[in-house]
Image (cartoon, rainbow, N blue to C red; front, top):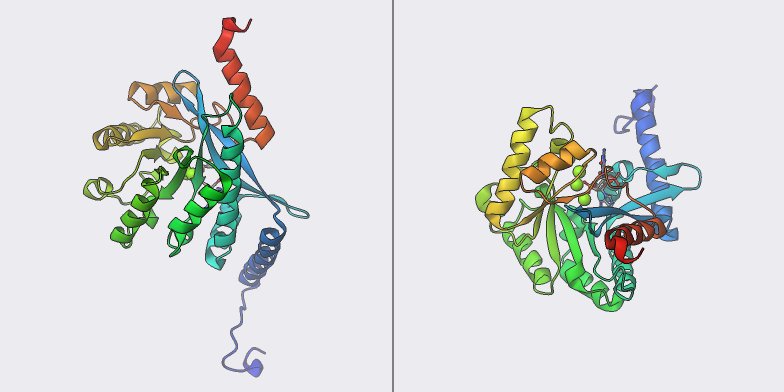
Length: 287
Ligand code: C2E
Ligand code: MG
Ligand code: MG
Ligand code: MG
């Protein structure tokens, strides 16, 4: 049957594979429409200092589709990257995050909050990425020093000089950089020290079994020591228990993000979280 359709026809005979291809095409159609009609929202996962103070948040993209419901970033981010849709989507994320920073700046209780924003490789490699970010900052009125861009190791290894130039151009305006999922890539020490980073973010894969897996504990210790050596701050992601937090603290990691403190929250719930935490910290003075 396939033969009668011609030699050059590409056909999938495996119905399961065909169905994967169809599902992906359908998701792409929906994603394209979602970008045009702005079906996205940013949620905010608190970043907490030892002692409990909320320093800011990581902005995490949420997509709720009419029929599909909530679609996980793990499912749509890779597709957005493959199709190039990450460019308009990433711009929307930056615009929304900066607009939010500007709004917080005007509220005394929230004025010092910082935001970490995930940037994908394809976005970062846009020729006009520096201008794009500076333009968004300028138009929003957000303070560049409150914006931190999360990069991953894999996106930094190609064309190191260009990467450093892009980072330096933004750093000159106050924008900070955090190395996300740290420990899962290939960065060498000599390479890392050349990057104008502000922060290393320990991947949750090392935090999860910190107390039961001696290898993970050793790696976490090493990453924290490495951050100190390089003069960088360090934050652990995926902190779910007090025991994990205490171990990290004992090694000198004093900044955390994870379900122990909070999941990513819709804007108004995040703001409530910050205000509640801060009024509790103010404690007896308010009572
Ligand atoms: P990531 O940047 O490493 O973000 C951390 C992920 O871990 C988030 O998943 C967060 O909800 C989850 N997480 C936080 N605390 C805990 C915890 O205590 N336990 C566990 N098990 N998980 C925790 P999420 O929101 O599903 O995002 C997944 C990934 O999608 C992100 O990983 C990031 O790579 C990507 N992503 C999310 N938003 C954006 C975006 O705006 N732009 C880009 N380019 N990528 C994004
Ligand atoms: Mg991240
Ligand atoms: Mg991460
Ligand atoms: Mg991660």
